[in-house]
Length: 588
Image 1 (cartoon, rainbow, N blue to C red):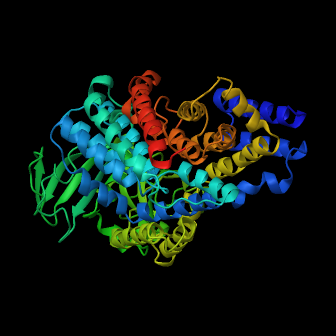
Image 2 (image 1 turned 135 degrees about the vertical axis):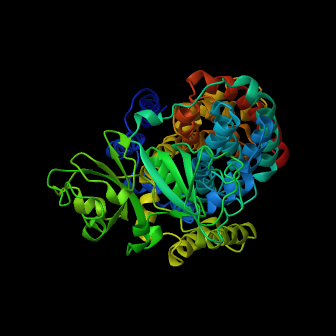
Image 3 (image 1 turned 120 degrees about the vertical axis):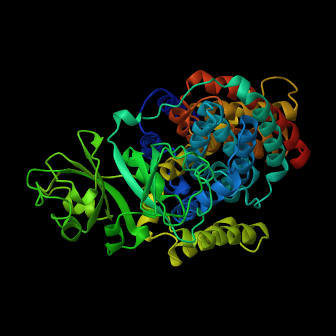
C-alpha cells in the first residue's frame, strides 16, 4: 500500500473511533478529518468539498423545508389523527402504529413523522392503560423500514443516489427501491406485530411528573362548526394529554366537574385543563380548540405567528401589586396572560382579579419577538419561549399535502429529477406561505448536512488513494467467495458502521469499498450499492444509530438492552430478506 492509502485508513479508523467513543459533535469530527486530508495533500480542496455540491445533499436540505411546511400547517398531525384513530386493544393499537407510520415515512421525513406520532401514542397508552414501551420502539422501527421504500424516504437513499450520479452517471427513480423495500415492510412489520409485545418490557416512560412541574390552569373553547363539535372527550383525544388533564367544563354558565370520557362536546364549551406549561402547547395543536381568554382575540398578531412564553415577574415590573385587569398588561406588553403560577402551583379564581406579585410565573401568548424585546429588561427576572409552541395554520394543510403529492408525482413519472421536484416543492411552500423563510432556515439542520457533505471527503480519499481497493482485497481473502456471500459481507459491515456512527457517514464510507469489491469479483456494482442503502438504514440494535431510536428512548423508558432484544432479531430478518431479494431484482 502507498503511504497515502495508509494515512487515509488511519484517518478513517480515527474518525470511527472518535464518533463511537467520544461526545465530540460529529460535524466537528468530520470537518476536522476533511481539513486534515486537504492539509496533508491527499485531497485537493475541490475534491474534498465535492460533497457540498452533491445533488443528494442538496435534495436533503430542500426536503427539510418541505417537512417544515407539512409540520407548520398541521398536515402531518391531521393525517396522524385520521389514520391512527382511537384503538381499544394493544393488537389494534400496534396495527394503527405500524401501517400508517411505514406508509407516511416512505414520502416524508421519518424524524418528523415519529415526532408527530409520539404524543398520540402516549395518549393511547394512558387511556388504554398500556405501557408506552410496547408501542414507541415499534413506531421508530416502522418509520425506518418504511423509509426504505422510496428514494426520498430517508436521507441515506438520497446520499447514495447522489454518489451514483456523480461517480457512475446513474440515477435511481422514485420507486426503484420499492421492489425490495415493500417486502421488507411486510416481513419486518409482521415480526413487530407478532413479537414486539413479548420482547419489549412493561415499563412507563420517563415523563416529567405534573406535581414537580410549574402548574397552570389553561382554558380553551370548542370552536363553532369545528371538527370537535359532537365528538366525545375520548374521541377528541383530550382525555389523557401528555402534560395535563381535563379538570372541568363550563357549559352555558354551569360548571361540570369530573366529566366522564363519553361526554359529548358542544360548540362554545369552555374546557379547563390543569398541567405543566407544555399542556398549553399541546392544546394549541388540536384543531377545533381556541383560547378562551377574551383578551387573546384582541391581540393584533396573526394566530399562526404567536407563541407561548413563560415570564417571571421582577421587582421593577410596572403592574406590581395590581390586579391583571388594572395593570393593563395586554396593551402595555402586547401579550396576554393565559395563566399564572405562584410557588409552582396554579392560582385559583378569576384571572383578571389576581394580584400580581414578584416571582409569579406568567404563561403568555404573544409575538415571537417578545423574548428578544424583554430578555434584558428589568420588568421580568426570566423570559423563556416554549419550543415549538406556534399553533399550526390548519387552513393550509390541504395545500401543503397537495404540494407534496405534486412533488411525488412529477418525480415518479420522470417529468423532473428528485432534486428539481424538491426545489419546486420547497419554493411552493415558501411562495404560498405554508412556512416563512425565517422558520424554514431554522428547520434546516446544518449540522446534519455538514456531516454528510464532509464525509464525502473520506469516501473520495478511500477511492483516489486505493485504500478502498485494499479493503476490498482483504474482504475477498476467502478463496472462491461467491458474489452473494460478498454481498452479505458488505451488508453486515455497513450495519456495524451504522450502529457505531451516523447512517449517512456509514453509507459514504462503504460506497467505494462496495464498488471495489464488485470490480474485483467482476460483477455488477449495483446490487452492492443497493445493499448499502438498505443496510445503512437498518439501524435497530442501538439508540444511537438512528435519530428516531433516540427520540423514543425517554418517552418509552427504554434501556440499551431493550433495543438489542427486539432490534437484533429484526436486523437479522431484514438483512436476510434484503440480501436474498437484491440479487433477484438487480442481478449480478
